[in-house]
Amino acid sequence: MSYNLSQQTKMTARVRSLFVAALALGCASGMVIQAAAQKITPPTTPPIITPPEGNSAFLLGRAVGTQGYVCLPQATGASWTVNGARPEATLFTSFSEHDVQIITHFLSPDTNPNQFAPNPLPFGSPTWQSSFDSSKVWGKQLASIAAGSDASCPNAGAIPCLLLQSIGSQQGPTRGKFMTQITFIQRLNTKGGSAPAIGCAVPSDVGKQTLVPYSADYFFFHEDE
Image (cartoon, rainbow, N blue to C red):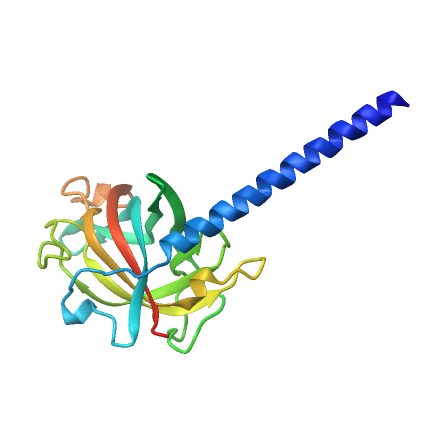
C-alpha cells in the first residue's frame, strides 16, 4: 500500500513538473513573439522592392541557410541553375542577449491560396513557418535588385534582394495565426548564396547539385491598423 502511494506521489510530482515546464515554455514563447513582433524600421529601399503604402514592418528575422543549385545543359555546355529547393533557412531574433529561432524558411505547396496566388499554382512556393505556433505564410517574388546595387543590398556577388507578396497563409494546428497577418516580405542584406564559379561547364557535369551557404535579413510587413 505504501509502495503504491509512493509511486503515485512520484507520478503526481512528475506530472506537476512537466506541467510547470510546459507553462514556462509557453510563457517564454509568448514573450519571444511579443519581443520579436514590434515596430521595426527597415532600411530605405528602391521603390521596386518597397512594399506599398499602408503596410508596416513588424518583424525582423536574421536568416542562415543554403541556396540550392543543379547543373543543367545549355547550348554551349552547362551552367548552374537554381533548383526546386530554393533557399532553405532558419530565422533568428535576439531575445535576452541570446539568438532564438523564430521561423523556418523552406519550399512547400500553397494549400490555402489567397486572391494574389498565381493560377495555376506552382508545385511549391517559398514558405515561412513560425517556430512557436506553426502558422505559415507563402510568398511569390514581385521584384528584385542585384546585390551590391543599393545600401540595403550592399554585398556584391550575393544572391539578389527581393520583395515578395503573400499568396496564402494557414493557421497552426492549435489555431495559432501569427504568420497569417503578413502581407509582404523583404529579403535584404544578402550575403553569399550565389552559384559557384566552377564545377558546371561541360556536359559531363550535368546533374551535379550543390548547396551554397547564405545569410539575409527578412523583414515581414502587415497592414497598418
